[in-house]
Image (cartoon, rainbow, N blue to C red; front, side, top):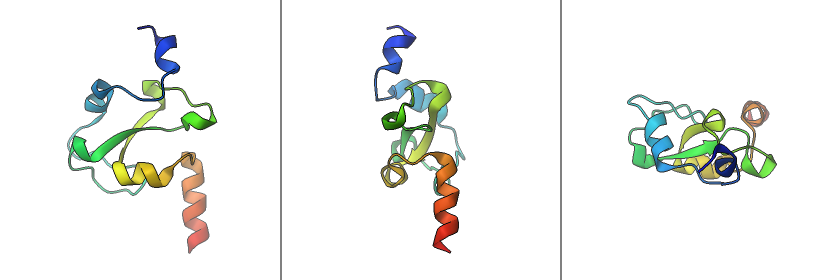
Amino acid sequence: MTEADMTDQRAFSPELKQKLFHEGYICSYCGNVILSVDDAEVDHVMPYSLGGETVESNAQLLHRHCNREKNNIIDADWSTEEDNQD
């Protein structure tokens, strides 16, 4: 499979998930440690729905529930939302 084929896919490979995970990995959404690779999902930093590619440079691990809560928000928007909740 070529890199062009990979960028047309929405889902990241299980191999990339394993490659990204390490002991002490911090979820970029909630700031807590991801204790197990099974508790994580590979997330598009730039959301797929907004044109983000399914490539390693656009991948990060989040807790499963954090990834669903994040939905299609771009990282820079997280801090804005948190700042507005105070």
